[in-house]
Image (cartoon, rainbow over all chains, first blue to last red; front, side, top):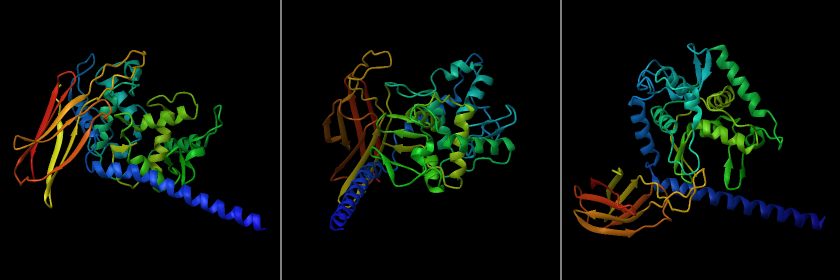
Length: 268
Length: 103
């Protein structure tokens, strides 16, 4: 009884201590963000993205100005907040990256292989065109509510697929997204793990990507975040713009719907 | 490299706060690319903050400073409308600058 009591106290003390440590490390990143204030190095990437959008490229030497992101050809403002959505011309639900791939192949005459070649930066890279475009497009929805379309049957089916994938355990570690992201108040190394099944967790995550990663010095997209989570689970590589990545992003966007977009964010 | 610098200068109490965000890869020379080849060092070596063309801050930077560095400094003696300028030079001899007026 006595021993159990002491053990109980020490458990509480350890709990308190780790809670203090936890908030302290969070504080460092908050301080960092506070110091930068409204400044985010992503601004340079946003400028690049805007330039790339209006610059003719590809075999057809066309710009992306006629690209329809869901609100009509050339309408970029507010488009990101409503993605992923169903596009009748391809008869499928697309996220921003899948849509950009569509525009690059249709308007600019690039091959899918060219677009897929290197969507995200590798070690030592200073950013890809896709990352810059997504940063600019997301910035054009800054402050607007996350409002992914869920009117079409395929949009709802995509959400359901996303939910299934989120809970799907597989791979050598028998992992699912839910293994890390179904509960609150936990962390991996020093990073807080958001509970993505809740409105708050999903909203905070979805609204802050794409984001400038301080440790990498580049802007990363939501598509990259999904792919990297899959890599961490030791799953097969998640292909940019694929049904699976669109489904996972739809799941997250719908869970966080209503919250204002605040991308590009600033991350560790 | 014609580099852009985002710069703000704001008068607070008895000092002027300057915040500058500049675009630079700040390569240390220690990193390797995907093929294993070393990425050549490229970093800002010398940076100055000028108030009406008078140097108020000078710093010698090295490879330890992050990519796309953010500089925050405070100095006394600034007045609204004065010109604040930030100028850097890197180890390749490239330079960048940006200026603003104190508000």
